[in-house]
Image 1 (tube, rainbow, N blue to C red):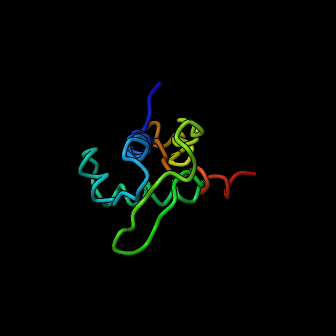
Image 2 (cartoon, rainbow, N blue to C red):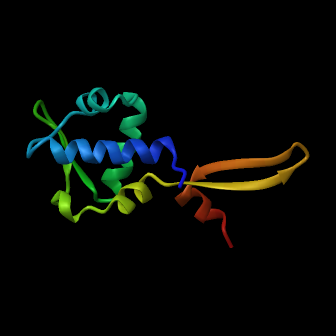
Amino acid sequence: MRTTAKADYAVRAAVELASSGDGPVTAEHLAEAQQIPVNFLENILLDLRRAGIIESRRGASGGYLLAKPAHEIVVADVTAAAAVAIDAHPSAFGWVMLVAPERELEKHLP
């Protein structure tokens, strides 16, 4: 099965959070530990937070942590939170791949 870099990074970030203990972990630490561009990671963390997979804490000792015990989190939920729908359409130039967040595509479906 093929996956996107976004889904791969989301799983790697969740695994890093699961293995980091009880306290919050900064986005910078996650990015460095998993070799993920920090700006890209911050968008992924936002998606994971909106999906209820992680929580964020503000302040000097803030960061990100899992919203529930690791054994209750399913990889499919993590990849779905970072899902990108890929759709192919014919054009004058051949087949064109359109990539958009799944929730954006749903707005345009009948």
